[in-house]
Amino acid sequence: MEGRTHVCLICGNAKSTHPDFVYHRFPKENQRCNLWKSIVSIPRITEMTVEKLRRNYQICSRHFSPKHYMTGHFKSKLMHDAYPDQNLQSTGMSA
Ligand SMILES: [Zn+2]
Image 1 (tube, rainbow, N blue to C red):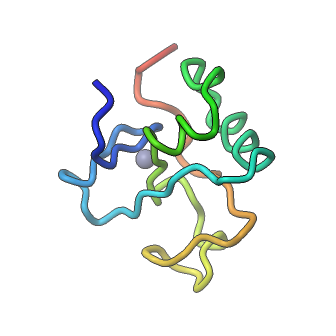
Image 2 (image 1 turned 45 degrees about the horizontal axis):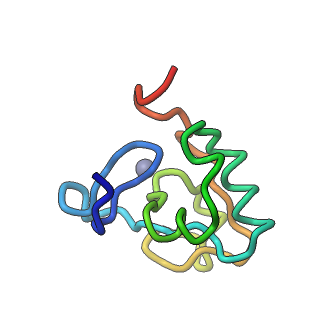
Image 3 (image 1 turned 30 degrees about the horizontal axis):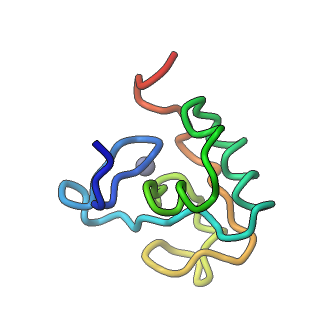
């Protein structure tokens, strides 16, 4: 079920089908990880530890606005305090 491939937690895009997106892991810091969790708001991840989230899920670059990137466009590094703020409705995995 939980592969090692890069799959976006929110929209389900995978690197194999959408290689044009960048896939970001959850932040290492608990505080920021919890922020991402609360923004994403997907019930099945609320109990997960930071380690498990980081191991199993990514969030693709569709969910970050350009201001969260170091150079102001995609395919670069996220800013230290970046968080997802775009296209946050998950695609029918839960109501
Ligand atoms: Zn996505």
